[in-house]
Length: 353
Ligand code: SAH
Image (cartoon, rainbow, N blue to C red; front, side, top):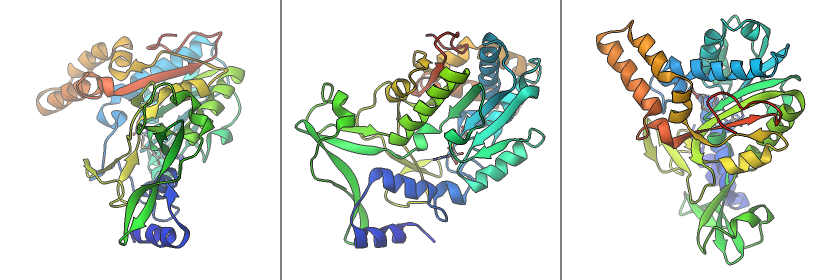
């Protein structure tokens, strides 16, 4: 059942593939891809995410989006979208927290960009009563002002990896040696898309380029600049990435990315500079640590209000969840938030221009 033997046969017959093609196959192969065959966030899953850690995350993201919608004159109708909604928990928390904002949740056309049939089923259950619309790609979202969130979505998109060689680059590939998958390198050649990385890299450095991420950021920015709206992009990464950040996780522990394609999650760090630039003509906010973003939106007050109704084990779990989302030594600093918004509007609350 594993995808490994399929990839070994294909590479043996046709030659090495790029890291991006390897990621695309491992995550979304139509019958054996990681996201196609399982719910990685469920009981006994491989990893967890901010919305699964605490309802406070989705509540505050929802209120930021709803305030951005009010700041833009409460346009109606509008599209409330999520990219890679996982189990639907974040969108369910957004809709519950914004139910009291007159006209917001009632008017919203909920739209979900999701590739996994298993996760679409989980989302349908979590969002029963909200009639979500599923689409395969961002360009298939319905028209109109677009308020959208993406949490741990961009890190799952296939990246190409390049190593500096003089003023040119060699691309990292996946080949086969002695019957097993192994990393290798393509011949050195020019890479116009990496011209801006010549100034900040040295011989032998590795940089990553995610063509799908920049294409999606461009589609979001063009939509938001033209029709209004805002995007909150939340993920691990930094303003400009450097080095090999490909990682595989299985059962909450790191594994070799080539070891079990289709059975382990694969991610890379997000290059937020590339997303911000691709989102033009829309404006982008400063890249903001998740902990700072949530504090500005009032997570401490919300945590206190929820704590008042809890005791013993559930209270301890709630305090730990608050710390996990915000503390710099946990997710608070590793995860960053980038907002995209129309130049003439205010940035989404929690973020600065
Ligand atoms: N946002 C959720 C889940 C993160 S996991 C959370 O925070 O809990 C990544 C999500 O992106 C999954 O729902 C996965 O199926 C989806 N995904 C990954 N690659 C995708 C692609 N190319 N197109 C659409 N959805 C994708």
